Amino acid sequence: MGLRTFEEYLESLRDGRRVMFRGQWVEDVTRHPVIGRAVRHAQLDFDLAEDPAWRDRAVADPARPAPAGASPAEGEEPYNRFYHVPRNAADLLLRMELIEEITRRGGTVVTLIHEIGTDALFGLMRVTGRVDAARGTGYRQRVERFYEQVRREDAALAVAQTDVKGNRRARPSAQADPDLFVRVVRREADGIVVRGAKVHTSVSVNANYLIVIPTQRMEEADRDYAVAFAVPVAAPGVRLVASPYLSSPRNTLENPLSGRFKMMESFTWFDDVFVPWENVFLCGEHEFAGEVARAFVDYHRFTAVAYKLPLVDLLAGVGAQMAEYNGVSGAGHVREKLIRLAAYAGTVRKMLVASALLGQAREEGIFVPDELTINLAKLYFAENFHAALRDVQDLSGGLLVTAPGAEDLADPEMGPVLRRFYQGATGTGEERLRMAYLASDLTAGDMAGYHGVLAVHAEGSIEAEKIAILRGYDFARAQRMAREAAGVEPAGAAAGAAGEG
Image (cartoon, rainbow, N blue to C red; front, side, top):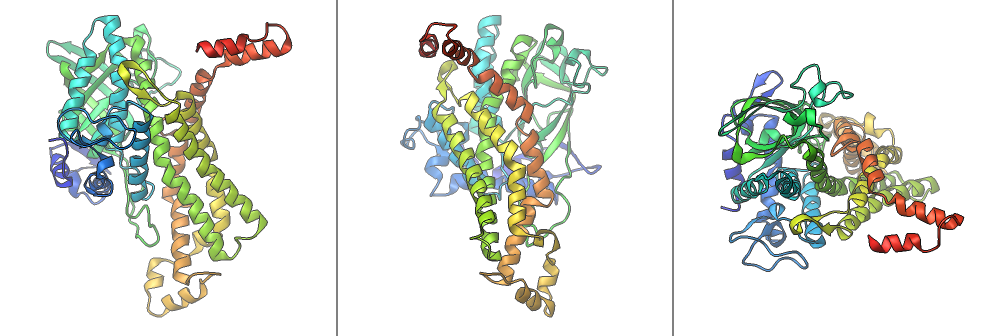
């Protein structure tokens, strides 16, 4: 098949999956008043593939030339570009472009149904070959077979990585409750049985498959927890509890983003779920658990920064527009805030591009973003996000939390009055109010809280990014430079070591 329509995607979700929302089991996620919004949000992925202006970029077609610099499509039939294994920097930059466009259309909310799963598949492709070489397993072939299957199906994928963890000071095998990390409870002739729970599972309620991978490095005692596999969301024993965040009623005037766009997360319970061996990609090889986790985040942090681009640009645009409406664009302190917003958005974008250009082909020719640069980009975004919210709030004024409601503007008596008195230096009163509603949605409401928590914790915490930066920076070379400068080592040693790498 290669490509699906949105209608075919909808039908694939009517499979009897077990999803709970606010204490009620959901009969059909596609028709649920809240989850259905997240399902419809995913339509953006399918629309892009059908858009004549984007089709050559959104679809990898073996019968057509690849976009400039990108590697050729594989196989014999067209497929969603997100499934294309990156072979060079141009492939990553094209992936960035697609993620940015979809998220821009989605009002800063990413769809993620193709992006996150392929991030995991690319990571698994890289690591499982090394597992096979070390342990004599056949995982790489299984990953390849599953990848080809879901590519043909144009499947929607979710990734369950983060275990509930319990006591974070204790290893998985040392927890008071053995199921606080997902583990293998039985190995059978035709597969394994897994038990445990994952949290923060994005797009699980509207995906076709869950890809499950370890969340951290494991030791010998943790071997039953060193497991990676794929399973249909509707598999017996899989149960999801969907997060209710951002589910309260809202209108699209006061909430122009959160009133239209939504992505769901869930608590994901594996209650003795059977997984056939063909879909098992790691099972007991504890020394590779951390490598699988890191290989996933190499790609997923690239995805993460790519879907932040519309958000940082929108913050800069809203701040500048509110300053114009308020008649303060020329003030010195306002210019300083606009400079900060511009520097923030520009730096995040350029660092993301640099991570692609500095990347390299790794195992089996799979191209990987530069680890140090992508973690620097993610850290820079996270550590400056709340300051950007503050600047937009300052530029916008108290109107963010004191504006009248949509019903007031619709009132035949008071609506005209409000439009008159809320006019600014430029534009109409309604235009200024609409921009204030957008600024409020972005910086002062539930959507702001959602983005704020994602900035700190999604795709790895700030501390995880710092650890990756510490690991990725070449301190040995820097120390040799210091020893040269101090005269305790012959000159040229640091330069020579750099050339060797």
